[in-house]
Length: 320
Image (cartoon, rainbow, N blue to C red; front, side):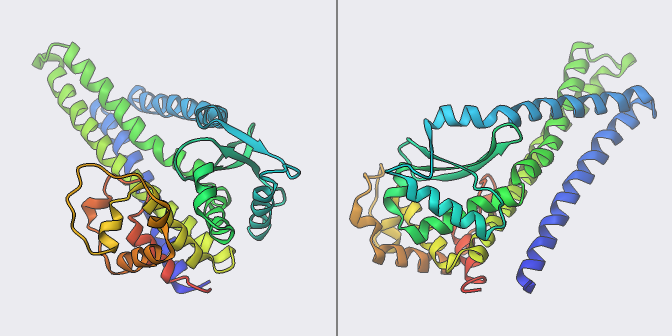
């Protein structure tokens, strides 16, 4: 295991542990202080955790069925005359990732290029690829993308992010309960309802900050999936870079201006053309991202790392 991967895993583990410990200490600490160590206050927080867990569990178990309906996803079988080759690619990448069984494969009929992994104990492991993605990527690039997506399943990212996501949810519910209780109490000093409302309002703000931490961890897990694609697929880093550039060019034609050095003022994004996703433009965009240094603010509300960070990370795992 190389030093870059060890360092990355350590950073990711510390971030997750920090969020869980800080969130737990905050929620239980607030109720301990407000109730003077009363068991009822601690039971309230525990009850909120249980409620959040039950709702999240319900979404997790049934989510794949809702996703299939929303994306109009149709399952692909090995003998499918049109998309059987896609199943074979998924099966090949699954074996290289140590899967004993190939995840169920779906083709999603939506108008944007994407691939995603999902599943639950009752729905099984699944991976879906949209039709536009099949049109713009070659097989090697698609395998690298599948290495990324199966990395999510391999790392159990759905379960990890659900657990981390409980923290801002519980803090929000606790803040709402205190704010609403204090507000309804009339803000009179005798029963400290005004103080409760202010504490509740502060917790609502804190829940937003914790959501930013969750987004940061989500970006780390996405980067971890990129590393998985680089390490488990032949020439995965290079092909994943090309796939990322093609996807970005297809959904954001304004990038053509950057890679070609033009500065036209556009009030709308023109429709993507086949020549816009040429090999030349793809390589230019990758080189542009290699030199670009995104700011913290550019990524703050993003679920994925900035493309420049992904390209630069993949460079560290090239041909490993």
